[in-house]
Length: 326
Image (tube, rainbow, N blue to C red; front, side, top):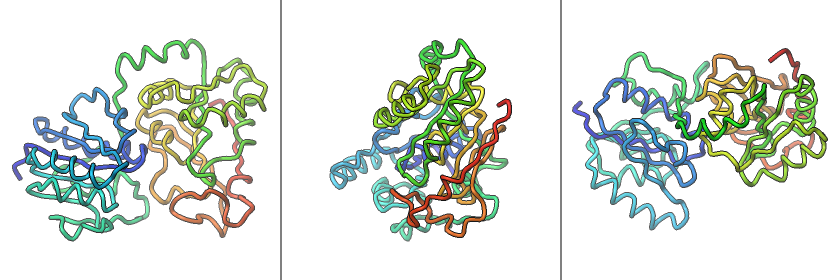
């Protein structure tokens, strides 16, 4: 197959974009001269800022979706791609795939427009398979010995931005999630704050601007002056760089987990209503999964919920973590 221009589409959440990175990493390794472009939803483009080999990052603004689909689709069609790889399973990404009008298109069967793709693949939960494995099957005929770990590229400016926080031993905690049932309860985070600061270490709380009030509440409850709320103060790449230098990181089954994987940062991940078997566990060399086993109500769905369907939230409230010298 003569490849000169390839487009990868992943318009889901930030973690999904991070887990898509092995696609362009492996393609670039095998085809270093191929033009690689990526489509992400608005808000995730900063993950790929100043990327060393992605030529163009297209931003899909889901507000005024139909109009923006047509405008972006026209731009993509003008690029005359040889191959479009669609990693998203929603109709909007299928429409973009068709509008791009590439010589070949690939994607998952679950996409409602996949019948029009050149090649279709199953998105299934096989034993031992991670989301990156499901993605990499789309290029298995093009790439051998695929590298599985995600990769991000913080810039020198990003590392300079976080230097001020790295003058002492520190831990990073990311206590929030979009979904209540994917978020470890406050008691877990307060226990971590109390346990990890006894030796003078600092704790940095990571999150989005919308998480500031929740994280401030944790600091007030802990009454610990060694805890700093960095929600909304760092970019995604700066957060990944900070996590890379932490003695240890503690996260939910959420976006920061995948930032840790991309930084190969030591991490403990809390899985409440979801399970690692879904294929979204940590990929760092030093990683730990913390979960409550043998609950007949777990998992209660592929995604999280705004509240526990059973009302007891045992998968969160019964979490236990044994701290060693992380």
